[in-house]
Amino acid sequence: MEATAPLVVKPSNVKELAESPDLRCIPYNYVYDSSNSSATNDIDDSDSIPIVDFSLLTSHDSHQRSTAIHHLTKACQGWGFFMVVNHGIPENLMKSVIDCTHEFFNLPEEEKHKFTGKHVLDPIRYGTSFNTSTENVFFWRDFLKVFVHPHFHSPTKPQTYSVKFNRGIMSEYSEKLREVTRKLLGGISESLGLEESYLEKDLELESGLQIFVGNYYPPCPQPELAMGMPPHSDQGLLTLLIHNQVGGLQVQHQGKWINVKALPNYSLLVNTGDHLEIFSNGKYKSNMHRAVVNNKVTRISVVVAHGPSLDTIVKPASPLMEKENSPSANYIPMKYKDYLEMQQSSRIYGKSCLEKVKIQRS
Image (cartoon, rainbow, N blue to C red; front, side, top):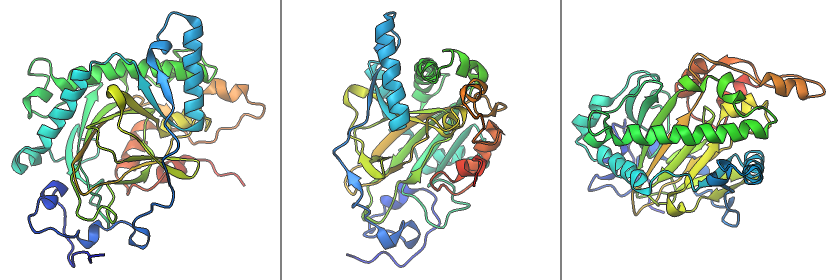
């Protein structure tokens, strides 16, 4: 294998690095886990992500709704990932979201850097890797993070993103996803034996935080050495993802990595987050996933994270505790805002943040 370049670069953005005309090998500080760089032994293509039919969940037929909730239960317990079909969001809107995100990353660098944030709770934040202030190894990824609820924000460019121009692609898409997420969480609440509206009220989802994240993974000359995003779980309750039909997402299931196939007919890929694990007292685990890169084409994904209100103290649901024979909370109550700051300010590594609020018992 060709040796990596004998240099270390402080990244401004990985797009610019990837487009360097003489780049044949990646800088040392982009080499991820070089002792086991390929990590292909544990990849399994035989399993497929569970599917939840959203039209059944929203059906007035009690049997159909019951079937959908059963599928949600199995998916949350066994995987922490599932694919949602028949969700009702127009395909042309989803395609426009991907196209607009691509357009943002193709803006001149001076335009994008106007949106460089300084704090993890800045409402608009453009950057690279995950947290370059704490990382020794950088990830092959640029990102745009935007808070779109309870207060809507948007970059002023590209114009199609912004609410000021014909309502805005980002605003419309985020609103439709909130409705899908609300229905999914209602079904999940029921699957836990709670009232449909219990989770929504308890975690104050009316003012819940919704974060729009655009990810840009350009071609990498040595994809076997780099990582788009390392294994991690997400903060929040549910994350909903679409991408430009380029593979790269892998989810962990039963100790193996599963390649997520390109989503058919613009389905939504959903994963459960750390705060759903806390709320369910560990019944529904947040799952680990990662993003790998390739040497041929750019992968673009748009993930929208849905969490409680920033000021909500998240803890295991009281009715779940009462139903248990020996009720005991497995997680320390923590304000969602504090957890978010802790996770976004740290190195991203597995479920390290969740472990900090998990009660360890001998």
